[in-house]
Structures are given as C-alpha cells and as structure tokens.
Image 1 (cartoon, rainbow, N blue to C red):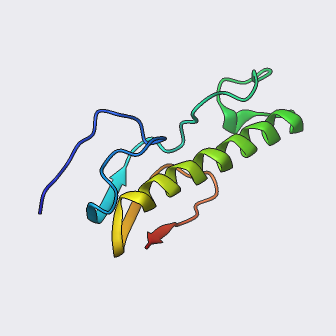
Image 2 (cartoon, rainbow, N blue to C red):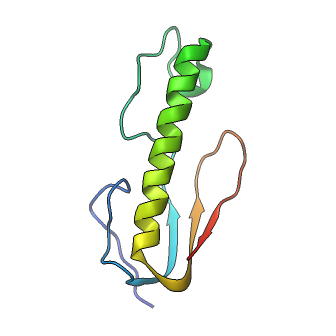
Image 3 (cartoon, rainbow, N blue to C red):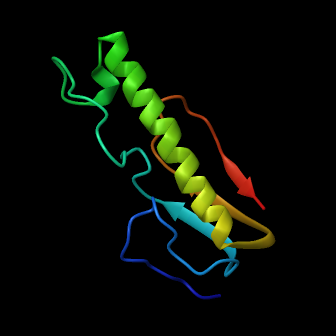
Length: 98
C-alpha cells in the first residue's frame, strides 16, 4: 500500500489516470470552487434565507461535486473504489465504484 498526499485541489485531477486501486478522502468537500453570489444576512451558506441565493449555491455545489467525481473516476483503475467522508447537510452517503 502506498499513501499519497497531493498538494493540489480536488477540483482537478490529482493523480495519473488509472493509477488508484483504493481511494479514500476525508476533506473539505463542502468548500466550493467559487462563491456563486454574495450571501445576504448570513455568514455561511447553510444559513441562507433568500431562495435565489440558496439555489445558486445548490447549483454550484452540484457542478463542483460532478467535477470532483469525474476527476476521481479518471484516477481509479477499472474495478476499484473511492470512498469519501465529508461534511453533508443532507446526510447522504456516496461511494464511487468504477
């Protein structure tokens, strides 16, 4: 087993294609690649009260999550898995198997 730490962000490909047999990450996946708008009257996106602002953050989060998963899929060897532990408002569980 080889452990790797990458000095890059998770929005881009971190490792060579098909080079990972078992991937695990416990990191700040709740961070977005960019803020889609200013938040009115709140400090954190979980506290947004304006529906349009909440929707903008939801759309950005979905786009970022897709980007993250597509890049991790590129790194995985066929037939292997990537597990993620991260902060989630909805409490969902995701496991990527390729």
